[in-house]
Image 1 (spheres, one colour):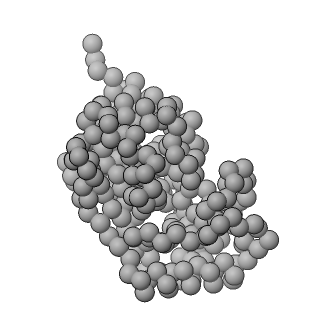
Image 2 (tube, rainbow, N blue to C red; image 1 turned 45 degrees about the vertical axis):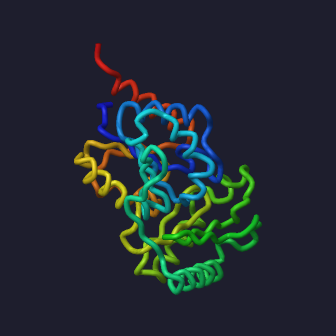
Length: 254
């Protein structure tokens, strides 16, 4: 591996299990990587969750001016100023769009029947500033069901495709292990890659993106056309190994 000039990470099932915070070891590795180069987290989670359960653990590291947080699928970007998180840009959905999106999702669930007979654990919808997120089995789904309820993403792909056909003016992408995210057209993780490239004056080809959904329909897949280097991960353990590779490739000479 050649040393990239910046690294971007997905969050759910990349840095941490879905719906959970990252391990202490992961926080330590990410903090160490920030000492070497700019690092961005590009996640479907909202900023409030990140700020509560993850960001304070990283903000104490050195060189946090190199750390970029892009929640809601890169619909927003925040940078640590040394005292507070500063919003660099932000997009949002209107209430009319939110209502329409939720109605379409429920109709597609009914029409496809892909969730019929499956249990639901808690609310399925979360309305974020720039996205509507739908968790197929609810937001409190037990860990043992997250990766076993839909082998090969067959059910979720059918539902995503149905929703996308009904919402041509929006991006409809799969994130984590149970979720489908809907955002304005073009407001997706590729925006984060291109913004960071321009902001840092680094070509996308010189940066590395690490994520678990780099397959068609996944919310990481959209970064591929930007030209950014990509590495697919099957979870946090493999991500730790990838970070180790990056750190070794970027070790100071001598």
